[in-house]
Image 1 (cartoon, rainbow, N blue to C red):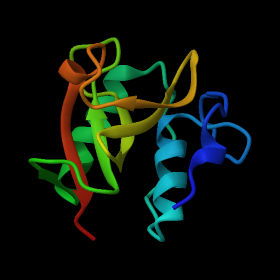
Image 2 (tube, rainbow, N blue to C red):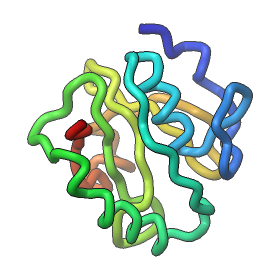
Image 3 (cartoon, one colour):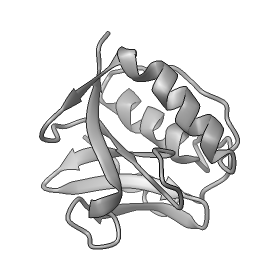
Image 4 (cartoon, rainbow, N blue to C red):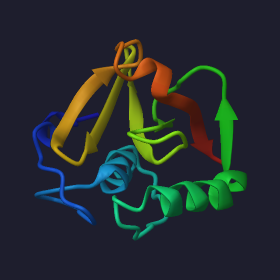
Amino acid sequence: MQIVDLIGKPFVDGGRGPDNFDCWGLAAEVYKRFGKDLPDYKICCEDASRINAEMETQRPRWKQIDDPIIPCLVVMRAGSNFANHVGVYIGEGKIIHTLSGISASIIRVDDPNWRKRIEGYYVPRW
């Protein structure tokens, strides 16, 4: 599965590709490359409380798993005390994500800056 071309794509709020992405847009693109469609959510990246509220509303559509599998959503806390950010687990302990001020990049699940921010791993129920 090819994702190398996504690395370095700039973060743009509401970005759905192909030239820029927000975290959900990037997750949707990665899932699409695995032959799976994700629903679209249009929420400003700065509205952390609304993002968290939508994640809570949508939680029944997702099954939490103990260990990451390819592909699963990695739900994280970015600059807040609640879930407001996603990446996609791509194997070998790696997550692809993008965030305001950070172009699409790969981080490790055990990265000291991110491991304690991971809220959980999720797969769609549909």
